[in-house]
Length: 304
Image (tube, rainbow, N blue to C red):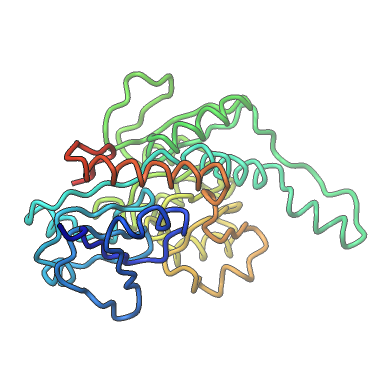
C-alpha cells in the first residue's frame, strides 16, 4: 500500500520531518506559488503561511491539516469544514514561554528598563521616577492559556487583574468586563493575548487606546492585526499612550518604519515561543496529533 502523501506548506523543524521520511510520502512545497501535488491527503502548515480556499479546492484528496503552532487565522477554516477536513494545532505547547515574554514586556515598560539602560550607556544616572507594578490595574484581553499565564505572573507582582474574553470564565479570580472598551477604561495597562478572528481583527483601536489614556501601556503577544497600528503609532508619538511592547506586527517582518523611531516602544521579532522548551513541546504535540490521526484515533487540539 503506498504511503500517505504529506504536503509540507511551510519550513518545519527537521526534528518533525525526519521521523516521517520513509514512512510517509513527504513533499516539501513551500515555494511561491506553492506546488500542490495531488493526491495529498495530509497538509502540514504553520501560523504565518496561508492555506486559502483556492488551495483547498486544489487538494481534492485532503483529509487532515496538521498545524504547527497556535494561530490558525490564515487557514480557510470555512472551506476546510465544508469539505470535512480535520484541523489540529499545537495550542498550549508554548503558552508558558509566551506568557513569560508578555509579562516581561509589561514589566520592562512599567519600570522603564530600556530608558534606564540608554541613560547609563549615555553617561547619565538619575532617571527620575517609574511606576510600581504592585497595585497597578492590568487588563488581559483573551484569558486562554497564554492570558491566564500572564495574569498569574503579574498577580504575583501585586497587580490587580481584569479581563475580557470571548467565553465566560467564572472559575478565575479576576474581574470580568463585558467589553474590551470597558476593560480598557478600567485598566491602566492592556495585554493582548486573544486569537485573531473576524471579531477581534482591529479591535484594539483608537477608542480602546484612548480609554487606556496617557499613562497606559499596551503589550501584544497575539497577532499584529488585532491592533490598529496607525492609531497606536499616533497615540505613542503624541503622548496619548505611555508605551507599547510588541512581539507581533501586522505585516511582519516588514514592520511599519514609524515603530523604529519611537523610544517608548519595545520591539521584539515574534520570538515569544522560541525557546528550546517550547519548541520541543510543540514538536511532540504536533507529531502526537499526527500519529493519533494515522492510527484512526481522535487527535487532540481539534480546531475544525
